[in-house]
Image (cartoon, rainbow, N blue to C red; front, top):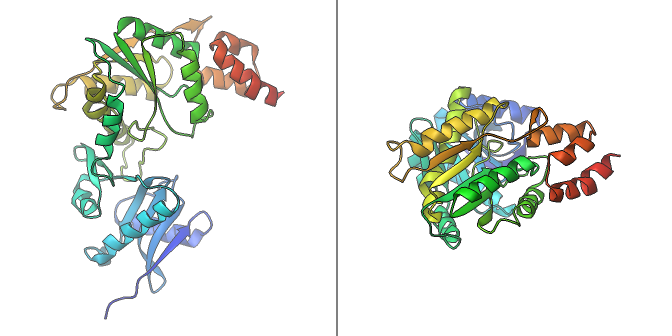
Length: 344
């Protein structure tokens, strides 16, 4: 006689007991609980959780099945349930990160590999032509030339430092593509950041500002629950993000160069800049053409490097006057209207 399996949606932020059970179940698969996930689809037998799959917007995370129940229809049913839950909540284009040894299982659930970091992580999506469609769309913005540049930025918010980087890169290239990272865990919402970048680029006649996509990975949304070593987490995140750029985005737009500002303060950003040289310029790690990384010295105001983090710090301290020297007029107009007045 088969065990009766019940499938339920649980919110672990409201149930300490469910959270404890899920943590234990994840530990059996050498996984941690991702702090960004609160909603889980769980399978229960005799009121005990034997399988779980979390959903964080459009990313499936924390999939685990008790060793006694692996290898049967329960696996497929669990993923089907979480997909249906995501769809019911308006998320149809789904992604998941998993260990390479789980790739075949998730292929059987209708997911397709995008890029793999050997022995660490595979990024998959539930559309066999998802990234191809995205690249086809990007291709409509393709410009011909011998030197096509690119910049990826958060612009949280857009500063004179960002503007200088764009101005310099545009002066060195036939065309420049600027991508604004699409996520809403920043102080400034994505639509605001995008508009500030567009406003700050309006005087450049060889620049295209692109809406960021799910294929430009934010560190804020990259799951780390299945990697115990922080160094491996950073390596995997950088590799996934930069290989997608090299293997898909750059060929679609004929990109030959990527520009970045130097990083004197943030260890994380500095490590990412260093990773660019490896993932984008090493001929051995990808069959796609190398992308030349150009790192330029960031501009200063007084004795301080101009940075978005400095602007945010001054905003938090309500020191508004110095901000005027750090941001373009278009950014200051937004700040003075929406941030400064509301803080007075």
